[in-house]
Image 1 (cartoon, rainbow, N blue to C red):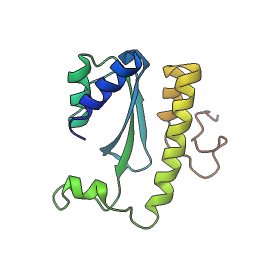
Image 2: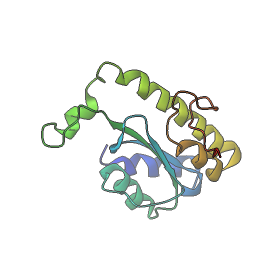
Image 3: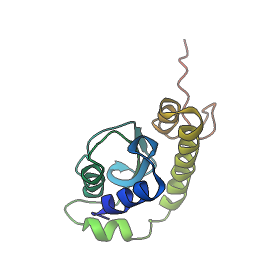
Length: 144
């Protein structure tokens, strides 16, 4: 995983695509489980696989979608990061993860059809709370 840039560059070369045609999706322990963050460009943010992609492509000008995987039971002091991300989810976390993956898929569809701005509006919203007016998303309407 830390050398992901090799595979991404080979994929781009084989298919004749540039970084502007990519959206790299990756897990992020710095985001709580259920949270997504989508950006049009950016740094590696300490993620070694993303650093490898940036180095191999020679640019950070490509979309990325971070999927939060930090459950409530994770502790930096106690858990080995590699072991943690490969463990099964705790009870109740699996459903939350599946919902976030569904939102990620919808964000990627929007990215393909309507562009990065529309996709970011969907992906970067917080997960729904009871009573929200849009399935899977919190309402952004203000009430007076």
